[in-house]
Figure 1: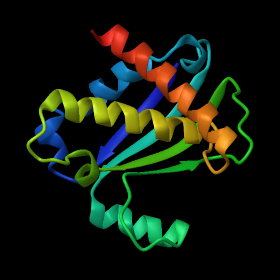
Figure 2: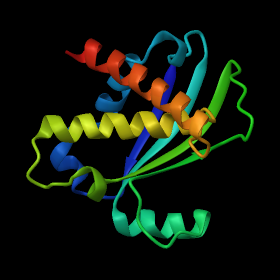
Figure 3: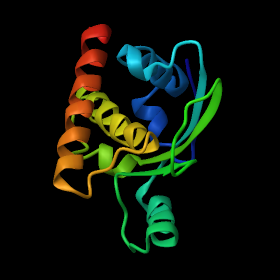
Figure 4: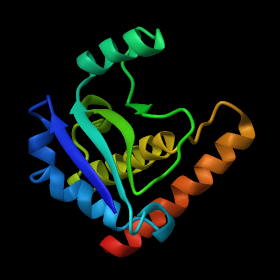
Length: 153
């Protein structure tokens, strides 16, 4: 089971997500079986942020002085899922997800689901620095996304 704690430091998120805790818990419950970690307690923290704050984090931790859509901070370099495991932190920028501002709510939520999956896989030590790793991660992202979309529709 995945326990996700959702925090927000950007008011605009509440315009698009009425109940952010419910939204992300529902997504995690729709993950394919291998990513739901049944009979285990896997937890992570999600911070819903904005470009200004994510830029600071990106500069401090990655030495990149620019905003980004998402940052993931795995708790361990080598992940081992035990009975209780904290896998890390994800930060998502509202400004990146809300482009264009005129997009429909369903498009906003689909983009958010995709980027959340991406960050989640980073917490599980997936990466995309090498082309083969990129292909492997992209394949997992697509499988998870399809599972979620099927279960939510």
